[in-house]
Image (tube, rainbow, N blue to C red):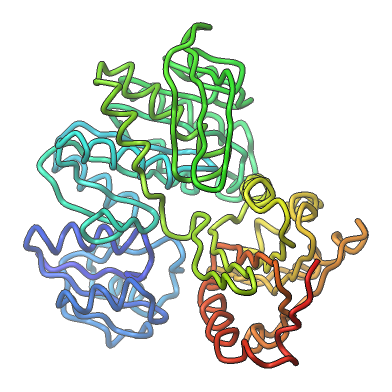
Length: 457
């Protein structure tokens, strides 16, 4: 079968394309721009067109589209004209899972999906269970970064941004939380959003939920939480190299968790994983060993650069909701107690920013200085009055040191550099490319007094 992937450069779409390619299907695709994934897929021999055009056509049997691709995309228009079936990403993914017919480990929810999914995959790999993995991020232990093909169970991240996620029937499901981040896809109805989680929970053998989540806590056969739930935390300590926590089960001391990855939110992610594997009867000593070695996921507090002489760090993070940003900055403050924290924040999607209501500014105010860029639209049409300036203005009203930059092309030239500073490049768009340019600019101009002040706090 010949498959045409429209938007193949996305992290979710590229994993599906890899799966089909490695099982012997004829694959090709298109993307609006080059990405790390398109470059990787091309190296494997997958033809990819840049950008979209109705001439990007090899007479496919099926066209698969990402949600970011609109119905007026020239390739979608041609597919309909030539009566070629068009499948949305999640619908096609569901067909893949039905065809695989294996035990499924799934993670859904607003925050922490990628890391929790990666932890499950890493544990199963450590236990030699050879999982097939579909990840919404990149992890260097997976053969293809966001995908690997195995002989065992399927592990996947399930995107709740599309209501069709509720049609899945995973064997084992973790719901990290539910904050209504994509209500525009649910008719702006919190009830409809809640029912989608209820539906998928009813179709799963085992459901693990966060006991302190207002919308989904009651859906779990098993619950985890800080102080509420079957699995809870008694105490936690953290340093730059590791964090530890004592886990209680039903009020009694159960085991100790050790992680290399920082952040209290990651202890909660690991707690959910412990609850899952304990309930399924796995050897928890091996699960503990695996979690202690877990390397983390790219762009989840990834230290991309460190100048030990000036004590300057550059960290990349995918955080794009207020809660994720708050967790990120709390982690940064915990690890870097004496350094100045500077955030370069790229808002993601106009629809998300429209619901902002000051929440991004409240989360970002934990930083010492904030640089706000214009919105990364993720192919959404711009809405009147919606701009990154909304966040910038809210931060100014809170008395924070903040700058708004509309043109990202010169971003790296407008960020003042001082010693003892941690630069956090934050967002789910293309901010990571500007982080790389910033690092290159810093390295070139490190010795220039006009760019590097050398001042100390």
